[in-house]
Image (cartoon, rainbow, N blue to C red):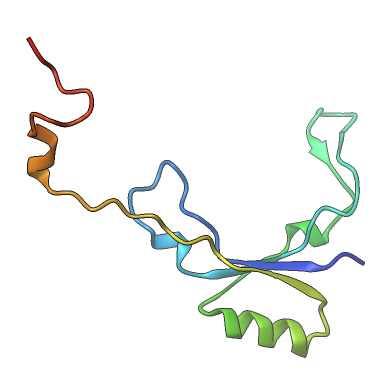
Length: 102
């Protein structure tokens, strides 16, 4: 049986806020191959564990649940965010990269 993965998802490129990236997720990796279904051509698999995705408010809650249920897991820590703080006035600075000049 594969190890479950506990991680904190990154925000998607379509999100401006970090609303759905504050929770921790426990999910299983794919353990069976995916093949097109013969009737409709949709992707299908016999792997039902892949459909399970549980959300927790903290890393400790996710780990406690996995240990209580005897689920072997791999913990993936989130990457550190790199913030470049700048003011609105920086958009109009004459020395900024890509500034229009005569």
